[in-house]
Length: 318
Image (cartoon, rainbow, N blue to C red; front, side, top):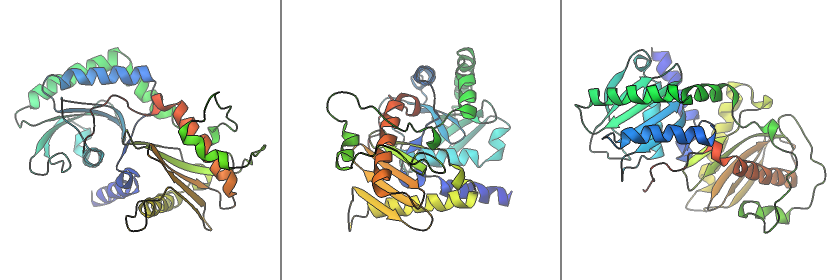
C-alpha cells in the first residue's frame, strides 16, 4: 500500500496541472461533450453543488450549481484523492473533503462511483445527509450516458484520440484577411520553404503543452519516441515547470517569450493574453524553424479547440 501511495504522489507532481493551475479534457466530439454536459446539468439543477465526469485524470464534463465555481487546483486535489484511493474503485463511496480554493473553512461531501475501470463520476454536495440523493442522481446519469452512447464514446476516445506531434500538419494555408493574433509573431520570421522532419514531429518537435488562459484548461501532446522513458518524461515536466516559474517571476518579469537550448532539448515558451505555449524540440533544432513550428501548433489547436476544450462550464471567478 505504501508503494502505491508513493507512486500516485509521484504522478501528482509530474502532472503539468500542478504548476499551470489548469485542467485538461479528454478529446471528444463537440456534440458528445455537450450531451454529457446537459446530463450533468440536470442534476446540478436538483441540488448537487458540482457534477464532474472524468476519465483517468482528464475531464469529460463539469457542471455546477448557479454561482458556484470550482478552481482547477481543487479539481486536481479532488481527482488525485479519488485516483489514489483504491477502495473507491470497488464500490460507491461517500466522503468528506475540503477544497481550500472553494472554501478552506468547510467540508464538502463527495459521492464517487466508477462507471468503468477508468471513467469516474463525482457528485459534490454541502450536505452530509445527501448520500441517497446523490446515489439516485448517479443512477439517472449513468442510465442516460449509456443510452446516449456518451460512455462508449468516452471509452473509444481514451484508446484512440489525442494530439501527437507526428500529426502536426507541415504547412498551413492561412485564411484570407488579417493574420490571427496567435500567429502574428510569424511575420518576423523569414519564409522557410522546406521543413526538416526529425525524430518526433516536424522540425524536431518532441512535445508541447498549450494552455488556454481564458478557459484555465490545457492540452498536451503525446510523448514522442525520444521521450519514451519515464525518466525522460519526468525530466521534461520538471524543465517545463522551471520555465513556467521563470516566465512568471514577478521580480524579473513576467516575460513574453523565452528560448533555451541545452544538451537535452531546445525549449521554447510563448505567453500572450490568450494562451501559453511550452514546446520541446530536438537539441539541434534551429530557432527560426522552431518558432515557425510553434505558430503551426497554435493554429492546429485553434482548429480543433471544440474537441479538446470544455466550453460553457461554470465560470471560474477567482
